[in-house]
Structures are given as C-alpha cells and as structure tokens.
Image (cartoon, rainbow, N blue to C red; front, side, top):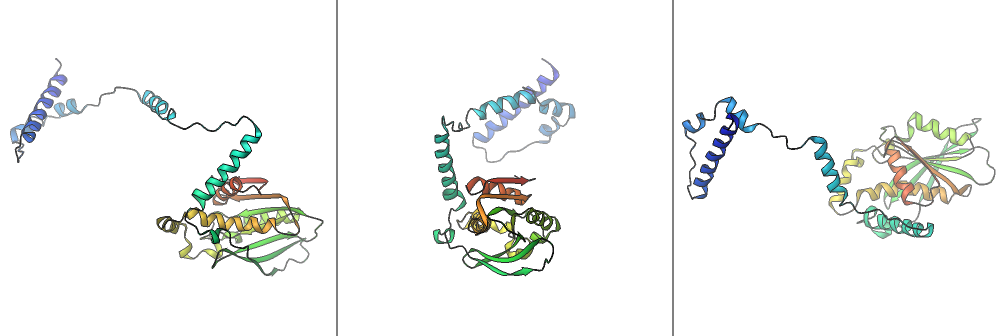
Length: 278
C-alpha cells in the first residue's frame, strides 16, 4: 500500500468513527488536539485531497452534450409548404397570446391607432421632408416619432420602420438621422420611433429595468416594448402613400432585437435587417 493510499484510508476510517459518534446520539463532537495534529502535515492533506481525474474535460463535455441532446424536443418537420404555413401561423399566435401579451388587457392590445402630426421641420430644397409625430402606445402612455418622406411622390412607395437601440440620444442620434434621410432621398418613407428609456422617453421611470416590475405583477414586460414598435408598423400599413407589400424594418443593437421580434411575429414585414443585435 502506498503512503498516499495509507493516509487516505486512515482519514476515511477516522471520519467514519466521527460520524458513528454523532449518529450514535452524542450531543457534543470534540476534535482533540491530537486528532487535529495528526492531519496537520501538508503532505498528508495533499494526499487526502488530491483531485482524482476520472475523465478528461473533453469526455465529460461530450457525455453531457449527448445526455442533454437526447432530452431536447425535436423541431417540427412539416412535409409540405401548406403544413409549414399552418404551423407558422399557430406558433405566431401562441407566442403572442401566451408570452408577449400575457397579462395585458385585451382592450389595450387592440386599442385604436392614435397618431398625431404635431408639425414639420424646415428642409426647404433638400428633396425630403420631416414630420414630427406623437402616438399612443397604450391608453394614457404617449411616445414620439419622426417621419422622413420624399419631397416628390409618385404612387405608393416602400417604407422602412427604424428602431432605436440603447442610445441616450434616441432618434436624434446623428447616424439614425443620416440613415433615415438616405431612405427618403431614395424615394422611401422612413419612420423612426423613440424607444422606451431613450431620447424623449429618457425619464428615469422609463428605464428598462422597471420591466421586471411589470413581470412581478403578472404582465409580460416584453408586451409593452412590442406594442410600442407595432404601432409604427400599424401607421405605415395604413398610410395612403405607402405600399403595404413593401415595408421593411431595421435597427442597430437594441433596435436589431426589436427588428427580429417584430419581423418574426408580424406578417406585414417583408424585409428585415437587424444589425449587431439578437
């Protein structure tokens, strides 16, 4: 028997005796100086506590992956386009009703679209116009938006919904304005929404962390964010100069997250370009 095996065996035997005393009903457990001294030698401690490499990390990782993958539900595999379309619609409805709008009053979710034009920004001779808009997310909660539009219109044209990320300047950020102006110069409408907690909605009470409070009282916080961006899509879809079959959505960072969620759950989106966010 090796020295290491001897000390490990001695340690286990002593541990078993201590457990026996406790299980036998003794109310006091005393570690005598002689007992502690017998295990004070660093070599003995190292021998007892030396890690045993039963398997290599790669093997453990492989075994864990195999164990978990066998328990992951299989994805649906429809055999025809018709089956997939039906499943697609079912999934959208289920996610919206059971997740996004969980805990939200139906009359809030389906409240009438309320957009108000509150004036224009002078852009004389620049081939595009800017309109300032105010709209209602849910009854009593207002937000703001900017509409960039081509100066000359011919028939119904495409439109892009632009969604902000975590930029304190919100829709006033220079790169956001330049992108929207570029769309307008190319003959498209570009609607830019303000995001909760940013820009004109940058009040402390609108901080994203307060979404946890909504969750706590039983209303999915994502529902508020979803309604805020869906209102923009509602507005573009009902605009008399916009082709509802040519509406796209884009955004950077948090705007990309919104782009992905809205585009996945609303069939009115025909082009989605999320940038650096998921």
